[in-house]
Amino acid sequence: MNCSEVQASLVDLLYEEVAAEGRARLMAHVEGCDQCGERWSHLRVLSAAADRWSPPPLPRGIAERAVARVASERAREASRTCRVSPRIRS
Image 1 (cartoon, rainbow, N blue to C red):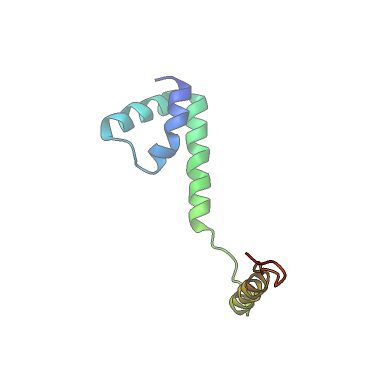
Image 2: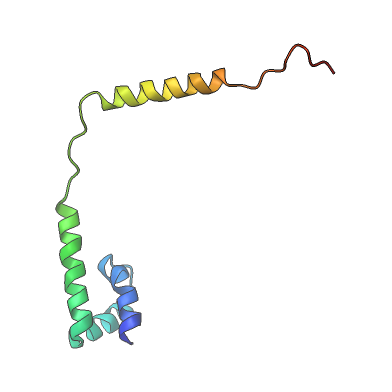
């Protein structure tokens, strides 16, 4: 395997979406190649950091404001429906 092939497969390797034989080949390359080894290491560090991250809490009342906004937008759209002028007759 060359570096391009290995680097294209690192995410699959990280998520264990590579069969055992392919995993062994990828890891053999990663362990013997400084560039791919460094990318593998960085990918694992980033993945671990992402696993630890949690989003901040939402502000109070945001769900209620969102529902009200959607209702307001729907009402406005409903009022914009196309109306046929009484002067136009078939």
